[in-house]
Length: 169
Image (cartoon, rainbow, N blue to C red; front, side, top):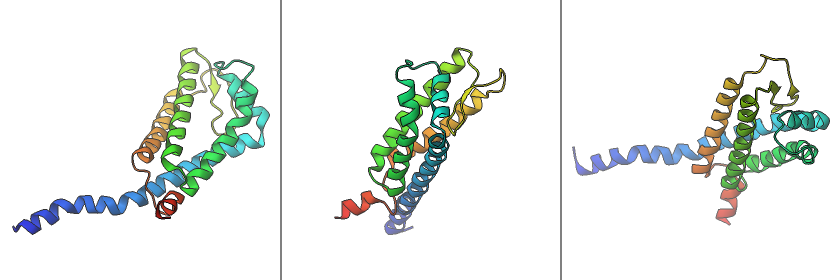
């Protein structure tokens, strides 16, 4: 095999990754935005229930529970807009990961304290009947969400993004 053929063969996977990665990052970006919209809209339509969901964790001081329960869906929706636009993508991934760390901490707290709550992540939330929660499955779901955010943190460059447009300008 010639030197050129060996070199071309060794560069092929990197070349494919360079082509595929921005498209994959686009898919991850949009998936994260859809998840956030699915989480934000039900809470925005029922702010009192969102507050109940935050209160159920029994982790925050009561004085801040109404603020967090009210603002959380709007923060989620704003983050979804940034992700859909591909604007400040790496920073958006960091915010996503911080939010996931908060949610995971809340679930671990509830689980460790023997609370039986609906997380309220996609609407609803609050205390539920004993034995109706599935914390291990919830943690597995969060692990998937963390994987998405980690991917976008490492590879934020994506197709059809405001970041790329601003870089070009």
